[in-house]
Image (cartoon, rainbow, N blue to C red):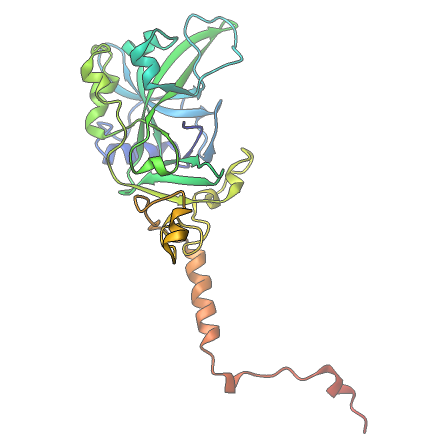
Length: 297
């Protein structure tokens, strides 16, 4: 399941990141419907999101803003159900509304990371440990809804990797930059060369618990992707119980690692507290009692 993710970068920064990671051939690639992009720390379904596509017969790459929530091309009205995810099993085992798109309309959704909730409904933020952009395998379609063209997309999900299974049993398909050309190539039909890319991510991920504020979609700030507490709320803290009995009660295991990122605000507060604690008690100035000002003469 992938229902929330982070893409807080503006269009120029997205282009630059994808160029430097060898996903795009140059920094100034065309962006179709660029004005629809809105940077967000809390991207939710129905929002316009950035996707990489193959443009026309030239097979050149372009970026395009797409509405998150798939509408098949043959629909003429706005449906109530617009799938935000397409399961690998659905694509490979039976006919579905995605059949045309999986052959000729494959795309890559660009993100900085995504959110997931565990069985205790605790939210976690997941990003690549190397801090590269996440490249989600996706499908897209252009439908004419009420006479107006609208391009929509869905993110493909697969079974969770061993690492990620401690949080959830599903995860988005995360591709490497070397796989992008194969995935978006509309001349490569739905063959094993394409299907084999739809596997659990085997690279290193950084995962940490974040604030519950990520739940309401109205919340949108850097706070949403910061660890709750580097010592008390990170996954690694849960992985260091004092007793074996405690360990048996934990949902998470040592596969999940402590976040490497600590906010600068937390660092400053710790430094301030340390400096206060180190003050010699003999030099602490005592505030005089207010009654001293009213002493009798």
